Image 1 (tube, one colour):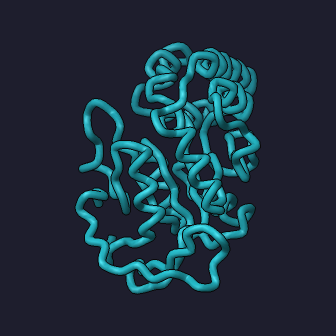
Image 2 (tube, rainbow, N blue to C red; image 1 turned 90 degrees about the horizontal axis):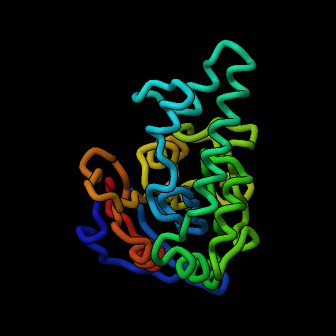
Length: 237
């Protein structure tokens, strides 16, 4: 559902909340609060297009219609898997050196922190490449996130919901009070599978929103502030 189509009619303050928003919200008839935001990394907190997956797939022999990580894991020979992982990591580090923050990303992270929301990153990338990319951010660092879940964690990567559930557990929030934000179908699928509230960042030249079943659709990160402030989703969203 597009943010512009939301019919927000009710905001009820939570008198027992910590300093910050503390809005009580109603979702499908159930009362809940947004307590945490979990971000995809590439294309969400960074500008899209840093990694050219078509080139990566061609280099390691991965079919165009198959995800890279799953292809590597299915390789029968351990040496083949190790070589493919090494190639992928080289591409990631090279891209990380040149990555830039998405417009509004740093401001949004600082805004969420100032309002006592827990913040995390969940990515199919390596932790090393994420840390390298964050060096290109001027105002935030890894310390501004409560957790970073990369593919190095012993948990199934997106589109599995396992990583989202792990993040909710580590941040000590109910998964239904967590916003999962990303620019790819795997992000929405992982959030939906775990029971989180999903936000699709539709910031590519060709819109994908009609093919992705997300609770919210935004075109800029700035719009996420309105979702957090309102804390309201319509029934059945």
